[in-house]
Length: 207
Ligand code: SIN
Ligand code: FE2
Image (cartoon, rainbow, N blue to C red; front, side, top):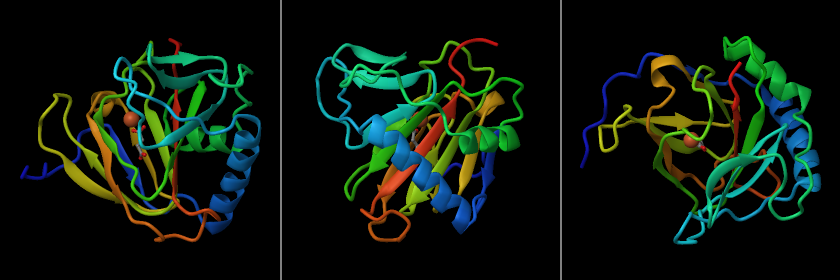
């Protein structure tokens, strides 16, 4: 059993209940519009081809994909071959309120977690710049997020993320290991089909 890290890293900011119910509903409608054009797809791990437990889509000029060839950003949906839908202005607004960054986000990764989905500890490091933070928005079922340090295998601190919560990791926290150790099924009624949506906004290219 690992001991929990006792303090959050510098550059990590937690905004509980950042979005009220109306803002959450509006964002869900935006995301429904996005996935109608760019359906959720099943990402797999490079080399092994093992499926991740989440399903994904993206909006914005670039989108993050995971397939047998690797992890990367690309401007098109890997299944339909069409450009990603535009980033809804509501997402850009949230970025402008919390990111403390002069540049616009270029990618919004949409992760959908069903009942048994998790995400192993990892760093977000496929971007060409780490000068912008990652902004992460939680909608739907409650999850346990874990944040550690910048080295693999260190201690992690659990943070419960509820629908409407926003976290930002930038500066010294930009490359911290993080993941989702569990999702509590049916803990929210926001999403008609249940589950959890996580939206991560990122800058990919230097600015
Ligand atoms: C991620 O690290 O890509 C997702 C984190 C989350 O689902 O809250
Ligand atoms: Fe991540």
